[in-house]
Length: 177
Image 1: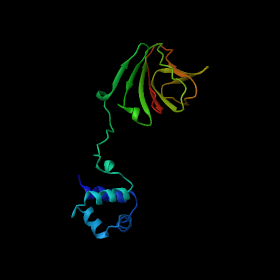
Image 2: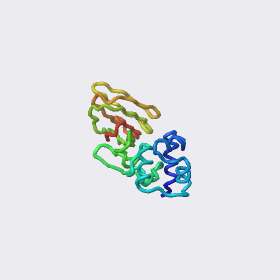
Image 3: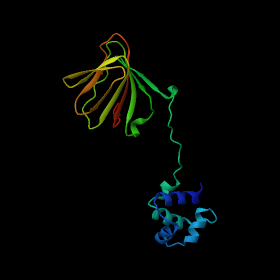
Image 4: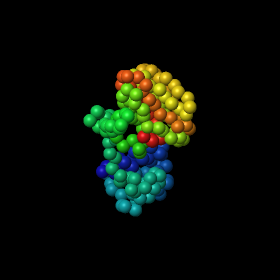
């Protein structure tokens, strides 16, 4: 681990100059400059003081940065075939994220699961076919190329009343599928 680089990164993220960090840690500006350039090494106690002055903890400081996966391929998808529809989990492990996208395939006369009331929002885009969005007692026809956007305050689901396949990109926040 490049300790000096990490300290410099945190200092810059916090909008601090070397002089301001020196003042907060009671260390010299020259020592901190040498530290950031890896010309010297701090003691554990000194490093802990610097990390604390930068608003972090030792455990966070030493946590290895892992490259977050940004692009997902079809091989990454998890396909869940259910009785009246298929759910394609197109972004793995989204329960930890703020939103959750899925791709639903509704065969002829297929119906999705019923979503119970929640505090989030949902967005849908009909990629193929035509669906009926049922929100409480109301029904809305949504054709290919059209979208729907709703809050989760009512029971709702989608259904395919046609003889052709329907595919819908459905995104919810927070994750609930």
